[in-house]
Image (cartoon, rainbow, N blue to C red; front, side):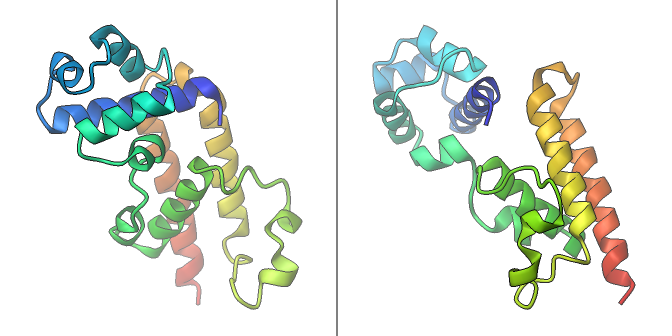
Length: 170
């Protein structure tokens, strides 16, 4: 994952966790003894906290380092989706953002030959490839989008609709 993109994403999660507890940066300083200017840099994605500082921040915000670093890894984001297309899209998005998978170059990259009896990816292969390509583009051009979250949501909905059509053809 691109350093700038990772720092910005981490910073947004730190800010969201702090704000959900209605804490100011000064309050977080009081709990962690990390300078509020550094906390500001972390939240804006200018700097990445050291492991020690991230541990202090996570403790002060009653969360885990994993949740701050990787986001909410629960199945909630997958299972709460309204349809099969969005569940599949959310699953692949989570795997991509967690760097478990990357942009798929061709069908062989899925390992479909050996995996196919257990996981049927053929039906959705092109939609998933398009999703991963768009996520790669999103990562590369993150800072150029006027509203990155909106772009990502629009991309996910488009691919989910394509997957839903594939599943209705049964």
